[in-house]
Amino acid sequence: MIRTFQDNDQIPIKELIRACYAEYDYQLDINGYDKDIENIGENYNGNKACFWVFENNSIIIACIAINAIDSKNAELKRFYIDKSYRGKGIADELYNEVINWCKENKKIFLHLKTDVNFTRAINFYKRKGFLLQKTEHKNDYLEPYSVHFYKNKIV
Image (cartoon, rainbow, N blue to C red; front, top):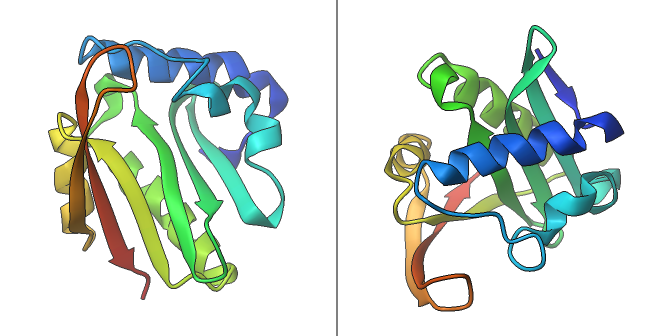
C-alpha cells in the first residue's frame, strides 16, 4: 500500500535507506548528503514536495520523494526498495505516484541524480525514458564517488 509520509515513519525510512546503502558499503551522512532525511516532514511537504512510503503488513519496504525545482522542473529523490521486494512491481507503482504528482503540479521535466554503482536503478530509469545528462566525480563525502544526472520529459 502506498501512502504519504507520517511522522512515525522517520526511523523506519532511515533504516531502509541505511540498509540499501549497506549493500554498496556506503554509510548515511546525516550531517551532509543525507541531512534531508533527519526531518522528512519538514523537508518534503506542501505543494513543492512530497514523500511516499510503500507498506507491506505495516512495514515500510520502499520509499520515494519528489521536490519541485521551479515551475517546470522537479527532482526525483529518495527512491529505495528493500532488496527482498525488488522486481515485484513496487518501483513502477511508486514511480507512478511521482508522475501523477508532476502532472498535477504542471511539471514538464523530471530530474534525478544517482550513484553510478546503482545499476539496477539506472536500468529502471532508462526504461522509463530518462536520458543521461552528465556524470560528475565528487570527493565531498566519506570517500570519492561518481554521480549520474538524468532528465526525462513528463508525458
